[in-house]
Length: 309
Image 1 (spheres, helix red, strand yellow):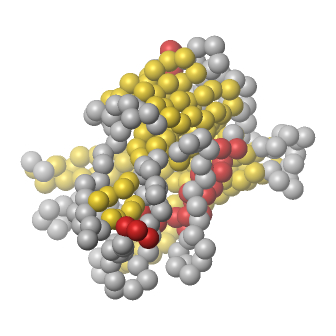
Image 2 (cartoon, one colour):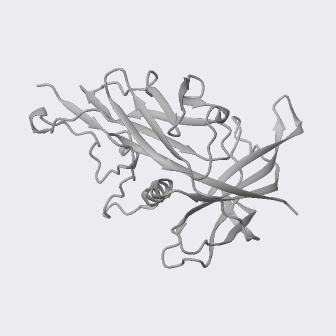
Image 3 (cartoon, one colour):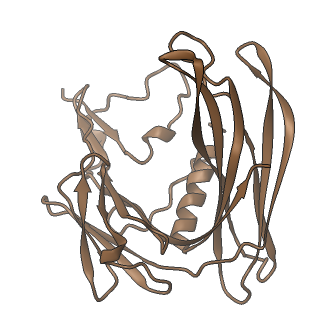
């Protein structure tokens, strides 16, 4: 008797093992509901964009014990419209997503945009977003603390940074926010051609300072903060530690005012990743893609940059 295995590309990475049994369970097809593969779209736009990008995949229906998992959809028609002008996003094989330059369709505050995706087999999905205003950063506080970190059997002293961004919420309107911290650390790495020489390489780490809305805090000072511990970056093929020294070069702090779709999606994504209790109710990813899954949202970013002292 033929066996069918069902997967969803959205939820497969969030499943947990409750026992030593396999996650994949053989099921009599007669007990399964009829289902079609759904398009999955991820697209986020802002006035700061240097490229307009959209990722298009699909939920998976695998037949047989070793069914092939489909790759990204390469032959979709992906368009972006502001209501008066429509452009096509073209798939880039090397990058793995559909793209166009913002000069073809400028992203402007207050305008509503629609992304539409269709495939040769007749599937169609779409979603809309309205570009929010930007928000000024009032203050950024950066504190550092020396901490002992136990790595590879040795006690190593590293620096933990706490970044806090503060801003004034706009009163009498509903607002949604997200903040990010980018830490650029310079690592000293031995030259593979001559280990006596050190190559200094910048490595960037993005730290999500999370999301917040102004519910019950309308017009007040709001803030988001999070710690970041810069650690060693590993070992080379011979097992030798590849970073002999490291130093923080600069910190970039970004404050995003977002639309409700961007906010709901990233809030649900964070809660899903932080849901470590296997007995708790699963957190479903937010979607606003009509006829499919995923998110089309927008944001307006303000950045400040700080050199390390």
